[in-house]
Image (cartoon, rainbow, N blue to C red):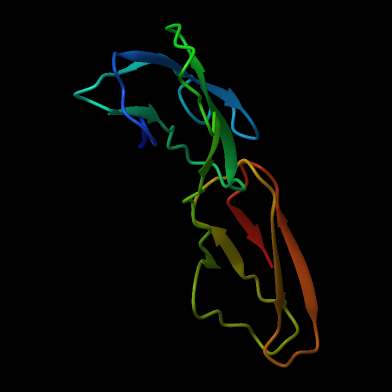
Length: 157
């Protein structure tokens, strides 16, 4: 995806063109992994006082926390009467991966002669993060915890 950032004159009028440089910087989001590093000059003029810039966001298949990166503006052209305020902004990348966990089969039959039933729990996609599942039997007498390590998509109960 992309995030569109608008830069423009917030107050006053321009008598001539002014150029600012927009630069991205890592926060918890990392350039090339989570978004595309961007450094671009933006020129506002008396007839076009606002410009937009698109910054690419990498859509990965990783279950992550929301991540941030920042933008900063600096003057490129010399204009002593121009103030940049605010000169920084923060972008939050909201993670859109969903975890789907379920049983491989909805019905499992077990013989009365004491053999154990085997239930398989599936994780819909392989994730680069540990996922822990807590479960209980229907009678509530046994409780267990399962941990999917990175790359594992199936565990037996």
